[in-house]
Length: 233
Image (cartoon, rainbow, N blue to C red):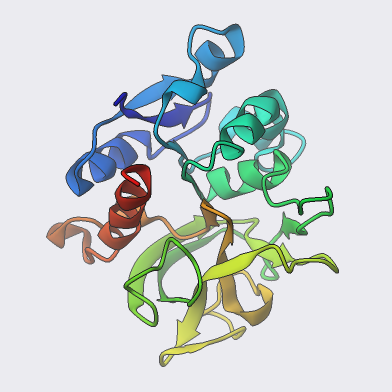
């Protein structure tokens, strides 16, 4: 099995932590440059799983994740059709939306990620709850995870048709989903901060920054344990 691909574009960060977190969970991973995928030097279909980490790909010009999502949209959608897992964190979540990975089977939109209600970057530790019904939260349903966030555009505005999507994680206050600030840093409805379309997961919190004791939390390991479990199916 080839290593999982952690995709990197100009402006991406957290890729080294992401590679480490996947390796820590039990499978190999490596950085793959978006330029190499576009040129054909890399074929994503050879990989068991894909992660798009956080950062500011192409400076978020024209909108967060938009250039990345358009540049690699065809390849990302083709990979999603294989049924292999895909993880998008923060900017990666934005990329997935821009690439159309949260559209329904007939092409209907799953909504969009827009600017936080606070209209500023929100960077701090938060608590999320693992929801029920997602392949990514199997075995940890109801668990509370302490994870960091760092985003300015993380508020999900759902479309009228979202039945094809499954909520994976919600911001919580005292163990209950919340829309209240600052526990919900973006103001997203229902506290939603992680969405699945099959085995495609997008989430705003950064699990790769919470995998070691000295990070302050090891809760992020549960996300990567799920990633590896899904790649091994």
